[in-house]
Image 1 (spheres, rainbow, N blue to C red):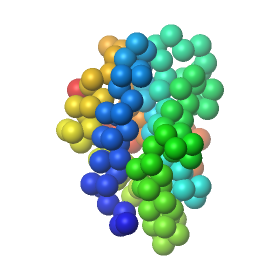
Image 2: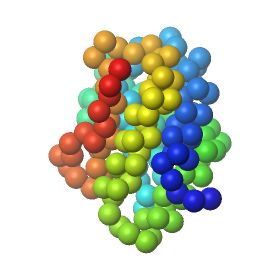
Image 3: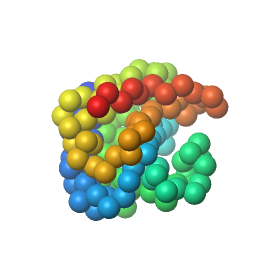
Image 4: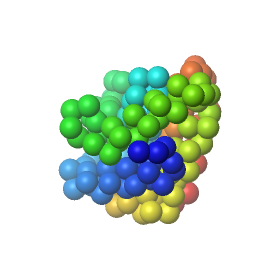
Length: 143
């Protein structure tokens, strides 16, 4: 398949629609989208309102990498990760991918799906540059 924002958007829409019932009893403060094209990997992680781990230690979150695409939990995520890796081999600049994923995750369709979750009043969504230790958030949540 071909790498495109619409495919990314559809993969996120599928993921959030599929998992909403499993997570309705959890109050979500933050969703982190991890983009790692050099590993052919996309991670969706949830930081819960009652979380004890540090908010900046995503790998320690209870619901780190909830997408589990390599464990059969998100096949369309695996497909976009493979497309991402193929594009990465052409151009090793992470920023265009970050912008594409940010556009996809904040589309009206995906936002509508995320709004079905039990979101904290201070909810936010983030996409960080994995190559930057002090990355800004490239994703703005507009309720």
